Length: 475
Image 1 (tube, rainbow, N blue to C red):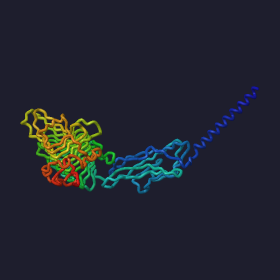
Image 2 (image 1 turned 45 degrees about the vertical axis):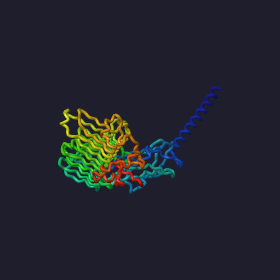
Image 3 (image 1 turned 90 degrees about the vertical axis):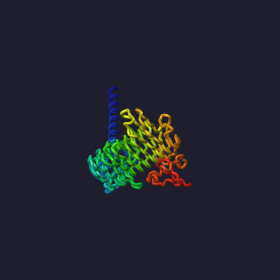
Image 4 (image 1 turned 120 degrees about the vertical axis):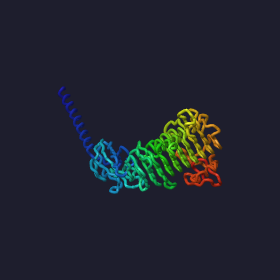
């Protein structure tokens, strides 16, 4: 009986062992076989590979794409290729082979494949969008991963100082280091010129700065990242610094974007210097739009918006005139505690006589934003500062220190009805209270005020709007 039972157990173990071997063999065969199901899909580490902005002579970084086989069987990719094949600006490397296409690529079960992607630097002088895709064909199905880059051909400016220099609009300029215009020398920038700054760089002017933009061809100065996602990102470069050694600065039709401080003016008036700035947009600053100390500035038809601290800060005296400007600060990247316009006067020696006569005049201007007060005058040590607002719209509360004697024909705390401040469109809706309330004598003060920043004629029906934009209404 015992022998019979032992024999039965041996037979049972033999059957089990045989079955296990068969299962392992079948499993192994299955694993070694190629999955031919028409519903097979690859998985990718990303569906889009994007490159930073590219400039000529600077090679791109190498991007990595991982292709996954999550199945329990091998898969065969019958074709991997660039959509634009031989005309593509992109280069791919598949399994260590540099090629624009490869066939019959096997990925083992539960394994993956690496593909490396580069792009040839562009030769266009205008910003171009370079698109392509990597196409995968498996069991008759096609899948793709998109390739996207922006790029252009530029002048590479690596000098640290320049003398009398003219920049033309033939192709853009990429600034690598702090660039200094030497004392008694002039940098002239032609209409339509585009200037891109690397991070932590600035334009320092010890001489003169002349920007000759026009309505149709403004001069653009901004950070080097040109992808759409960066268009309103602040702090991408330091900004323009007009030093106490500098003299005459004329800025016409410029777009100064994405810096820390758009324009910093230091003691221009004390050195017989002056900044004239017309038809210019300064926006997306992590700190301030205009930061002036003891300087002389005349600004006409300017838009200053989206600043992390001040849109305009005027300190230690000086003489300032702002006409038909819209200063609208709806900053939303972080908490902002400072007003759009901050005027600080400090008498250093504690005697009024030691100070130059200081003044700040705003005419036909809008000063608005998302704080309860957007204008503050702060006076120290018995200083004297002549501040006047003529025919302006201001957002102020009791903390602003702006008294009624400073306000002539002004409106306070009204809904201006901007078209869309969230997209930085500060044109006025047809029902805005700022329409037709400008002082026409202010509009006639300078010829460049007779048209708004868009070139729209003011003084239609002998009236003008407050702010940088004139609203066209069919009466």
